Image (cartoon, rainbow, N blue to C red; front, side):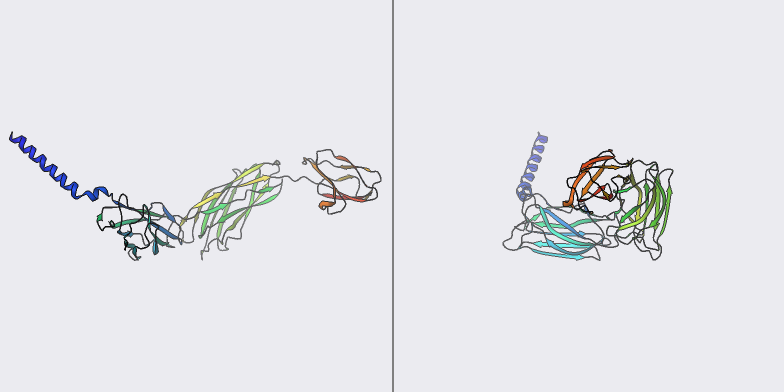
Length: 397
């Protein structure tokens, strides 16, 4: 019996404590914590201006004031200024102080009459930073929130919670590229340019491997392009047995960067004799690497090229009528020699030697391997010119 009474009394005490807490903490049960947060996916390159948003979610309540301190890595970032975000009412007082020597920004804000609350979830403050020129690719800075405090619009203290941010230095890649419109005929010597775009940075060295179809092309030699300064050293090795060219280049003192965007190296190739018209080879870039002029590694990106064999047929030779012929019959027989590579022939007849549009009186590009064509000459006593492929001949009728 005593045990039962003791237990019952303790139960009453617990109920009394719970009742007291529920009545005196009613405000906190109704209002969740105020959430402060900074994104974790902030990126930028050295020299850029970085905007860091401070988000506030007032949750199920009001916010009439808040304080926050943000720590950052001052070797990467330099604080510049701030602007109010869209959820801060225009009547609010905002005080922001940046201390770059300690890598810290403190923010204090509060409502003035008529004591409007912050708006719903959104950006309260935009902080602007300069990304230092000494920043290195993939360096990071945690944007740490501490000293958080908030009150509602009646000056009651609210619980707070912070979610830290992260900034990462992203170096825009050095872009290596080869044109996709390269072409040449059998036994031609062609120059293939390796173009490099430093992409708002410096390039003090680079490496690249260039793969090609050895049945179509044979590597011969190389030459420097206009963007490569004279003090640079360059080493190019071609291996025609496997269809590969490796390039290594670097600056020597005084360590000049590549000069802007353009061709760094020209590679000279011979189009092989057994190549067929329409054959293609991808010009594939691999093993790309680059550093800036102080030896920091840079990101790289490669855009492959394409070469196409285009055999240009020889021009057909006149058989009849002969040049400057006096053709009496109205029906004229055009004859020319066969060109083995030609698929079609085009025959034009005009009243002037420059074949201007209005003076062309006959134009047919669908003549397929006929080697001859009869044309009815409409006017006797006039002069016409005819053009078969790229050769022009005149006759007098």
